[in-house]
Length: 117
Length: 113
Image (cartoon, rainbow over all chains, first blue to last red; front, side):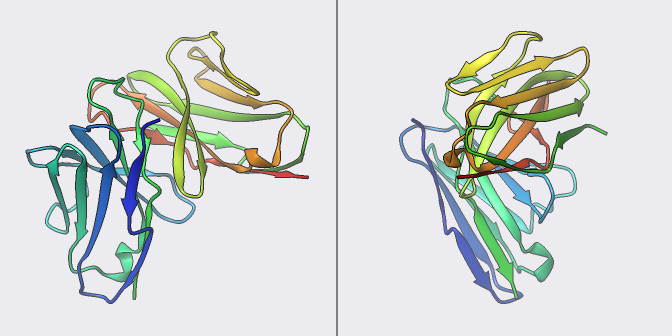
């Protein structure tokens, strides 16, 4: 089956530093990948849509200059949390849709737990 | 505001029991409803439902959608300890990003031996 690999699974960083999270589709190509955030006891919330070869589309309220997304190939999208602050501490998870498949059938990575000190 | 509400939030049962997880929604321009199993952080796809009254079945798991009453249920029969996980319900509205799934908070199922 389709596998999405997300790395790292957890990261602790100091306030003001930047953190990069990678999302790879291992056995399929994904023109589009998606980034979500989940705060404790809350639902997964879509942050942005990552489009291969073009700019990401951000959901309302998500700062594009703070959450930089790069989708340089059909199998890799990266999310960089710039100048991280404690309020950015959260669980970040990506998903990908195999090109040509049903739009709703997304495959998820295992997530990244970010803790900003 | 679109929302998806799951109940119960947590559930503890013993092996062999049958459980029913609930998902109700209020979503403008409904397209589909999806169930995911989240264990060790990575949600895995279970079912996608688009039509009322048609049961989807996979082994001991089954699900059905009622678009009139705006809810879905996920049934698990003869539960096993490996069924322990968080079960997520999500609704995909028409339009918007393909990844724009509105998730519920999940039901945490614990199956005791």
